[in-house]
Amino acid sequence: MAVSPSSILSSRKSKWMSAITLLIFSTLLALTVRSKTDTKWRDFISSRPKSDGSSKNSGMQPPPSLPSPDNEEYIAFCLNVRDQYRDLPEFLQHHYHHHGIRRFYIMDHASKPPLSTQTYGIPSSATTFEYFYNTDIEGKGQYRTYNECNRRFGDRHTWIGYLDLDDYLQMTGHETLVEFLQSFHHNQKIGAVAVNWRTHTSSGLNRRPPEGNRKALTECIIDDPKQDNRYIKSFVKTEYYKNTISSRMFALNNDTITVGENGDKIKAPWRVPITRDRWALHHYGVKSKEQYEETGYRVKNGMEEPVDMKEWNHIEDMDHVECPELSKYDP
Image 1: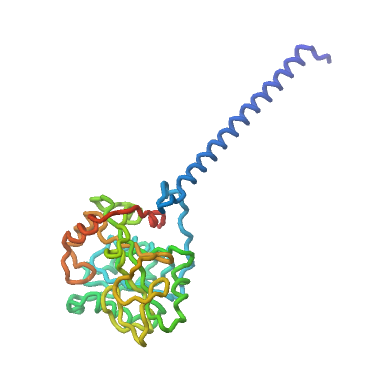
Image 2 (image 1 turned 90 degrees about the horizontal axis):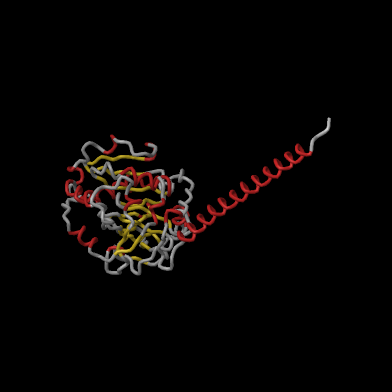
């Protein structure tokens, strides 16, 4: 059967149109991919830390990788808590997931109802609650409960960290918490290692942030050697624990000493110069104004000391810097 010239021409025209359409589609696709790539690149560049250590878009930074769980319970945390049901979940989840802690001793200072009646978003197997009536504490608060922590549970662990619910640990170097403390393990002159605070402000918030402290409170006081960031909290080798001097310092056996991250000797409940090259302790002492005012209806840190606005004003009136380091942590 003969094919007419007009049919041949029509067929060629159809093929040319298909080729042109495919070319246009390919070009548009390439431009779209390039646009998205350029956007991601610009976002990456803008998220890189600036020379002052801040970040224009900290949300683009990847979250820290999760450490292996401390299933051997080499480290435990001891907390003195009263009525802070709403503050426990974020603290426990942060240290359970991001530092591998598998044992939290929660020394409950006469909470009503007891803290053990609630759930906190981590396996209940990781928490041990000890309830103290006011008559058990006899006005000594943390001093008594910290001593009890080591007396009752010290032989189960190599280290116990004595923190408040306002304290959130960050490993700032390339070590996990277990690796960091292991670096001091065999030095028999060292009985405790202390970490400097990084004190957060209210970030201008009046109400409790639903997203939690780490994501909402991203402003800190400056590192003034005479102000709050010089203060420390301690992780103590259980075999050298003698008794509590304060919530920050401990008397130690065998003439052992407390040191900072660089092995520098610490003789007081503060450490200057302030460094956080290997670890840091973010302290959310004031939080939002609503949360701070709530502390007036309990006993601060388990001690018989009513809370007023002095601490709030003290922190809020200092010079501030951005500190979004923990805002990328989930959960």
